[in-house]
Length: 331
Image (cartoon, rainbow, N blue to C red; front, side, top):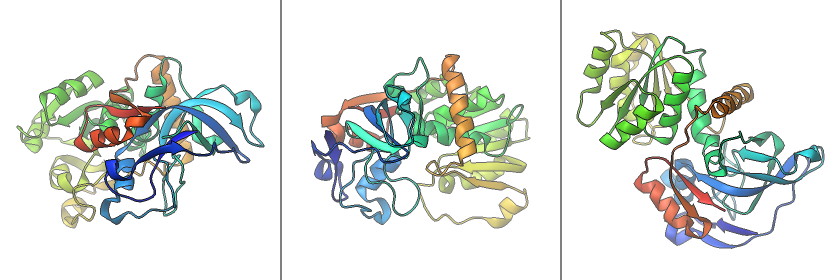
């Protein structure tokens, strides 16, 4: 099979290679998926780059955790009627822990445990499905990890980002009022189309003042946080007593200093979201919600660009530059 791979970390154009690899054989409990689209997440790019000292966990890695395609074969113990099923999948490469899986979706085939694939809803393309594993499921977990949100006011920081865009849609579907922060007019339109009722341009407006004005001084019940280190002080200033900050990233500073009393005095709850380690029950509930929204034509997957597999280095560089929408590799 044709696959992209790397044997050392570094710049995309220097370490990513394209060549033939053996087609994997599905083991007991696994399925073999003919990959049609491979989604790229920031974690995939960071792992390939060796971000903050990340080391190679295996001699050779095929990148990307997310993807979509058709089940081509099954291992022992898996119902053969699943062959031909359109699916989306997650945690193919890397994942949670110190020794993740070596072979991801940037290849024509991937063998993966059967419980790491889900039926691709009608109406969603393979490219759409390749964007669900980390972005959509992280958003679902961030919104619903502590219960229903109907009637709540939720702030989504980075509402035009891959996770944020899904979080706006999911929170609205759950009955919440959503405020989104963005950094450009284009991003504002993107987040508004997703369902944010109020938009704040964090580069041109005072986020704290605007949130307190929008909420008539009450603040918000929940914050979906794209960068806890950068926003922790403004977050606590606008959080209601006993509210929750659900953070799924902290890229600006992986070891932020926490102003303890500012958080403790509000009884704030800190919820850290790891998209590679979502509890099974929450994952199944998230899959069901995404399927329902897709079938009701209420789930919009934003795709910024699609690259062929031979241009995977360009695709990784696009992710590093930033994109309004997910970057996908067609296989």
